[in-house]
Image (cartoon, rainbow, N blue to C red):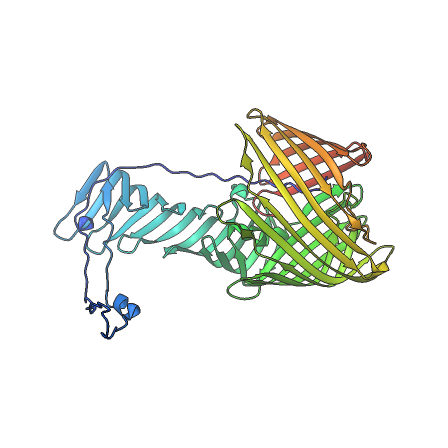
Length: 505
């Protein structure tokens, strides 16, 4: 049974409602400076048809969208119509569109539309949940500045610092720290500190004089750094450089880490680095240049890769190695999609001759289909082909499988699977040898406590009818990390992993 488990959880907040209109805030204005005249075209025979410049016609309209009114309530509210001064004391709630400001004291002006909260306040928008002091809110454009800031900019970015601004949805912090949701604490489990931090929610963040910390220990310093924040690329956080402790009988005790460093402003060109340092296999680095394009991702470089087709922890060195990953192709709204990849390079493995390898792989599958209450099923099918210069070998591998999941109660769940590889030919490398081409198995999991889950897994080799895996696993929630301890009874081996919740390796 192949290895890899990952987990993540996200939470959201927010209540509040009340209003009282302020003088100028209720005034909405819409204007048109010019109106384009467009000649009518009948298209009658012999009549010349004059094309319309749609861009020019569109630009002729200068439309000012109505400004959202400001509503304010408080236990005590003072409004001076002479100069527009306004003051609120006690349970102050200011709302404008999706923006909210909650504090105990506020003062401002309906004329310049600036509102100031010298003390602690909560500032909420459609994307952000922040608290701070010294907030100046500009109701004219929805921007804000803060002496101190703490909270979430976007769902996955926690920020804490001083000298902050929110302008056009972009966050700026003069001095501060940034981390992920599950690491949040008085001193986060891991975090980045820096100056002039700029956060573009859902896209990226930049920082100067960057330092990476694990609790009170500074692991490394960096000058200018850019990290991606889009959900599909969350592994590119600088935090992935944090060593991940591992242990198994094949590798021994080890540390692993990974980083993806952007090389241009758009972030589509990057330097990808990962490493594994183990007591039995030593240092295993990977360094590649990756280019993301509309037709897929290309990668070139040096790789040290561990087997994923079997449980034997065999390492292969790939240099040079050129890889291509096609973008996922969705078949309309059916939920069915196709993925694929191809590669070429030279492989070397302990005890095996170095030689060239080329191959491709494609797979078709779909989003899980609901069967009955709390049950779903997923089918998959694919084709893989490899050519090796060593022994002039070749391998074809059409395969298929199915996975059925069932939540029996809130605490108890089970998963059943079947997989079949119709292999012809062979590979001269142990690295990509497929364990148990035909197998079936099941897992049963039970949640003991909110932090502890136990899992029992059994796999049968259908070619020999032997039990190939009988594993007992304990999963422990460690705040921002998850510990996975497995005893493999058939092989009489222990496997221990510690993985983060908010990013991948």
